[in-house]
Length: 352
Image 1: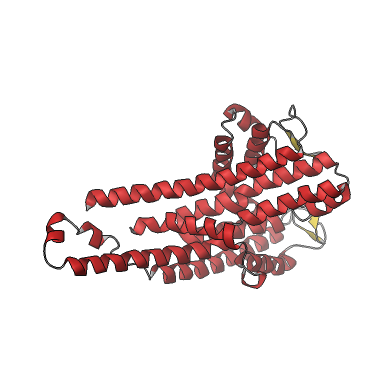
Image 2: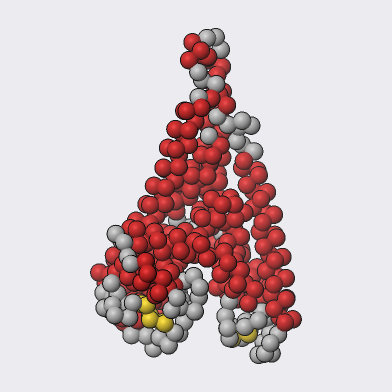
């Protein structure tokens, strides 16, 4: 029963995301991370290009590690407080429910103990799921991408302006096709960054793992640039942040690509690997390439890469199909959690 906490919490987080959306900004841990990174970035990144700058590199690395330590300590404490609600030996009462004990005296006490343990398990799982929810954001991602398509239906300028909320690239010269491509790319890439990867690290390392990943991904989004941004030069100051995100995203990005391929009914895996390697990032190309191949469209960033170049230009219908694929991935994740719960229950019954 103790092992059921993780899949139950994952289900709670997915349901809360769909029903409740994002918490208020003032209570959002990822917003706090962004504010802390913004404050630290002003102190580690130079205002002028200094070339090979090891001082900025180590300052950036030290600031990243300090923030990571704070995040880990905070979420280890939160998780410990929640897990204190778990029964000391979850499932012990269930394992004691043999035929002899059920037919003998004391069955009422045993039943009460079992009910208490189940309620404590559910309480801990719900609390963990609610704490996990702000570290993943599927509903918000889909809403923002739909907003780009709706704005594009009004005018090209409106579509460009709305896309600027999602991407850091220059949108002023993008055509309507390129705006739609960028929105679909963002949907695929952020399916990993905002959903699959946080949940993956939650399964691996609990709340601290999910929180550390979100810090790394947010730091890469704010610091991981090869040139100037917001009056600061990040080539060296943001290098540690970029590499940390590369490491933590490596496996989840490939899992995301496989999930997209699965819900699409399959894509050629050799072509997927070939297309994924066309992007400068070692990870973002995987979910984007899977999306491009699944939809049969090309997805490009002018002057940088073009995925599935022989594909057609995406249409509004392709944008809708992309949204449906992402929703199916979320259902697949929920299905995996439910399957884990069934296996845990069956294993508990075998030991009962």
